[in-house]
Amino acid sequence: MIRYSISVVFILVLVVPAVSRTVEYLSEEYYQRLEEANRGVVSIEGNKIGDRNYSDPNDYGKAFTGMGSGIIIDPKGYIVTNQHVMEGLTKIVVTLYDGTKYAGTYIGHDPETDIALIKIEPKVPLYPIPIGSSAYLRKGERINAIGNPFGYSFSLTEGIVSYIGRDVVASPTLTYRRTIQISAPINPGNSGGPVVNQNGEAVALNVCIYSEAQGIAFAVPIETVLSVGSKLIGKQNNRFCYHGISVETQETLPHDERVLVVSSVDAGSPAEEAGIVPGDEIEMINGQLVASEFDFQRAFLEKTASETIDITVQKTNERMDLSLTLRSPNTRMAGTTSVRNARNNQPRVIASRQSYPNPQTVSPNEKEPLPEPTYEDVVWNTFGLKVTPVSSDFLKNSFPAAYQAYPRGAVKINAMKTTSFFYRSGIQEEDFIAGIMVGSDTDGWSIVNAANLSYIAKYWNPQTLGAEYADVHVIRKNGEITIKKVPILNNTVIASKPKATR
Image (tube, rainbow, N blue to C red):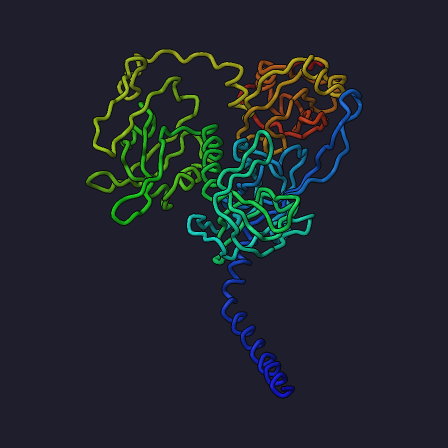
């Protein structure tokens, strides 16, 4: 009896290491894929302000460090994360896998899904995370989660898919739809990081955990992340260029292949002028294959008016290479109608153009004189900002300390060009500009409306102002006052230096 037991133990001792070595050998490629996935993950941190006593005007809350994760979706520096990671951050610091740190800029978010988009300005193209599909996940499949739990950067945990398609109520105003429940350990700091499959592809984005249990975490499918990311990128693109194309992804029979189809074209748009019609299948943009709306929106990132884009389309009977010249978003006319519905052989209704002239048929002598640019146009074209005024009462009630320094009011930044020198100096959307000071002047210009910025734009010239930089006084949405140095670039309008007022 003793001999039998010893023999069994002896066999186990010999067999187990052999199996272990076999698994390690077969999984070497798996570990390499996980390493590649890590390169597409970032750490996001910044200062947050805690609870404040609103009855005390001098209490702005206790500052602490917030941290989360994100995934790189484009080599130009666009990153997707959770909105709750970004909420309240007064400064965004993004750390890449190699330890390089960049200042981040908040682009926007979708409140229904808690997904946010941020941007950094990398010195070299970044490595986007490989993208997979959640459609092929199965309950019990092994997955990994990557993130920065409690500041332990780029940690990797392992688990399985526990359930697919669970709705999770996170708050009275937020419900995560059709999430993937996973058993991989998730902790604060993992939010915004990816769930990856055994091919090292992102299949979901970590969003929350069930705090009263262990091994119950939830992630949003990557298809939802990319769909929302496409809309946020499209919104960013629409600030700088206009093409007039709407697209949708369709499946073709009998092979169930996905193709990107033009669903509508704005009448009188650059797309219509280029010969694009609804029903065209878009195959390439500037030589890059496109197969989804996400690919389509990425192709227009950081494009500006007057740039020409090469688009390859498959029409009903032929494949064509077309050229499309982008225009300014301001040229899109209010109430623009679209040509739609070409794939189901139903008649297309071409929008009436009686309300405005066709630019291709108007004689130069018949053109009406261009209207004078508005203050808002000047501010957008010169400074790359869209602003709205906020009253002195708003500052007094919302930011008492800032009101003491700037009692006249300020302007709130609603949109920015990524090429703007304000943007590149660290000024962000939702900041308030209250004043601008140049050189050693003891006073400066108060900024309470777009007209003030438009006035300054006329003199924004180093020769006129006698300085290369201006101090822009910014109020952050937490009440913090900061001063950003913004370069004064040459302007075509030269005038005597205006009197500064406070």
